[in-house]
Every structure is written in C-alpha cells, then in structure tokens.
Length: 255
Length: 255
Image (cartoon, rainbow over all chains, first blue to last red; front, side, top):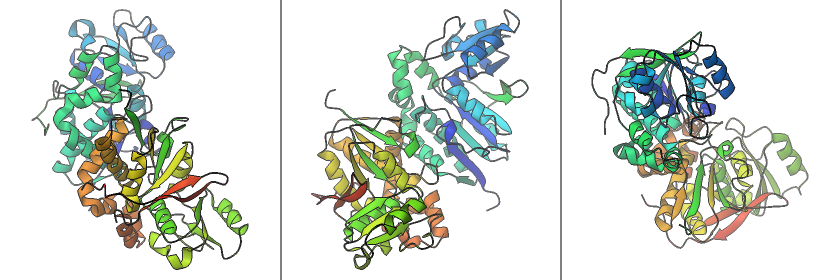
C-alpha cells in the first residue's frame, strides 16, 4: 500500500537503530517528567528550553547567558542538583518564574530521548499534557513517524510506553499505518492501562521512584491529559525546544 | 511483603542488566523459532542440544563429535547454512532424525537469549509448545524469575513478548509477584493478543520474515500450545540443553 505510513515506536532511545529516524518526524516522550515539564515551562511563558546531557555543560551554558533571563533546571536521582534554580517538577515552572526566560534543562532520561530524536527532520515533544495537540500535528505531517521513549535509567517504562500507545491508537484509526512490533506492544499497553492513567503512572518504576521522593503531585500533573494546547518542537543551531504549534482542534483522547 | 517474588521480563537479551539474573531462575524465549525447535528436538528423542553463537564454532564442535550421533542445525537469515544437516524449522526435527543424537544449534536470535540467561542459577527453555510444563516448573521454584526474550535481529518481538506475558499472567494469578514495567507490557500484550495467537505470530516482524521465506508451517507449529510436556533445561560443562522435567499437571493456558 503506497499510502501506508511507517509508525515505529522505540521503547528506549538506544533501541532506535542508527539512521532509522532520518527524514522522519520524531516524537520524544518522557512523561515522568522531562517532556511534561517542558510543556509546562513553555506554556508558562518560557521562550525556549535548551536540553543538555551533562551537568557541567548545563552550568557552563547557563553561565554564558544574560543574568535574569536564564534558569537552570533539571535533576539527578530525581532532585535538583546543587546550585540549580529549578528541579524537574512541572509545577515548579510557573509563569512568574518562566516568563521570558530560557530554561537550560538537564535530566537523566528525557534529555537522551530528545537528543536521540534529533536525528529526525522534525522533532516534537509529547506528554499527556499536550496529547491531542501532538496528534493534530502528526495527522498533518506526511513523514514516517518515530516515537522515542525515554524509559527510566535504561529500563523500559510503563508511562512512556502508554503515551506512545495512545498516539499509535489515534494514528492507526486516522490513517493507514505500518507499525513495528514495539508499536503493537505500546498499543496493547494503552488498551489496558489507558483507562487507569493515574494508577498506571503511579505503579511503574518511574512513578514509584517519584512517590519515594514525595513527588506525588508531579505524577498527578503528568496524568492531566490535554491541559495545554501547545506542541514544543526542536529547533537547531543552537539545539533548543520552542513552541512549534498552538491549538487543538478537538480532543483525541479516546479513553 | 516477604513472600513477593521478583518477576522480571527483559524484552531483549541486552536489556537485562549485568548481574541481574544471578541466583535466579531464568526462562529463555525465542518462539520463532529456536526455543520451539529445541522443544521439538528433545521431544523427538535428541539427547541434548548444544547452543552455539557462531557458525565456525558450531562446525568445529560438530566435527569433534562421533559421526552419526550429531546433527548440525540452525540458520542464518532464516535458512540452513551450507553443509548443515537441519535448518531451524521445528517440523524438521523428527524422531527418525533426532533419536539418540546431539544437536549442535546456532541461530541468530535464540542462542543469544539462552547464553544471556545462562547467568541465572537455573535456566528453562520455553515455547508455546511447552507453556504449561514451564508454568509448573516455575510454580515450584522459589527463586526470583527472569524471563529473557530473544527478539528479532535486535528488535523487540511481539511473539516472544506474548509468551512472556502468558507466563506473567499465570504467575501473577498463582503467587504474589513484584513485576517490572516490561512484565506489565508483556502482560498487556498477552491480554490483547492471547486470544488470537496464530494471528499475532503471523503479524509480527519475525512471522513476516518467515512467511516471506515460505515457512508458514513453522508459525503454525510455534502457535501450538502445550503440544509437549517437557521442559528443556540448561546444563553446564559443557553448556547444553537437555530435558529437565516431564509432566504437565494441568493446562495453564488461560485463553
């Protein structure tokens, strides 16, 4: 079928074969919490988010930017590293703090997914918080679709797979798609866990880690579907995430 | 809970962290086709199967064994390599050929899963063909359980995940288990695809490869649940697979 679009899910960044994303549109997912936090930060008025892999790199980048216009955010082992302005809790990224700033963000898992996704021609950032807005963008993009899940410390994660599956569920109803086996697994995950979203986010390894740190409210924030109508998108030179599109036509959440 | 047993699924051999399997009981799965073939070969009377990673190693090992008592079997790109006695089709491993022989077996994916599983204290070989017999062994084994899926050429595979999920489904009903996120995904996969087993095996990447090669009958053979009541088990010095247990108390297939 010539109209069939490739729809591939990678349950970890390292499971995407080198070169596989070239020419496609990629979706980076780290529900708990990096991509949820990015959506919140941009919705709160941050001008952009600079995803950075290493702590030192993040500090150096922030130091080189105009004082008062940059916030250093992120986590190691779940908490804000020493000297950081913000951790990785979506609810910390308020309009008061974020407006007209650039966020330099470094997280354990999410940054890897975004940097791996950067191989694609176009890169969207997805969370449950902007699910339907991402669906809408993918519907209008003719390229092969590659969904890159961050996972948790090298392990496949339930919550990222669940969001990937929610996207597969929408796309498979909307168009003819050719899915890989991991996309089928993600779809199964959404079929079974989509109805109990908050419970699913609490029960996975990432959720259990956050509950252990007292971040229960972050899980609740991550489970709020379609709270925002923006789609963060990766821009190049320098690599940064900005609002790429605004506006949900209608909710695509099917549970 | 002290009675809670760890039940971890790894959707690819390389996703099992080094050392994670030590002291546990592992289950190696390559539904299409290595573990299905091993079950068939031992049920047909082969005395043992020697899993070997490399072609040259397989040929050398077979050359050093008594003529007439050894068969060289396996595949590269799905077909028997030059000079091999048998490919990797379960139905080739008949009593007439197999009785009182040792099979030296080298396959692309399954061998990796078995060799990775070898880190565990005890290693069982599972296929749909001996599903309930494996369930019975796991029920009576108190060790942490690690299910290692072979996948297909480095990609996560639907059929291996499905069998892993069928085992999770049985074990979670039978005992208190502590599952990892991948075990939840496998369980979801079984919930959705367990009822349409043959269809699921045909639609995955491994199944599509086999259909392309004309091996449709191998998929049918792999989908025959509980055809045999044996549990192949890995033995050491030298590394080999032999019948470890015989006898199904009752069918555990729940679909």
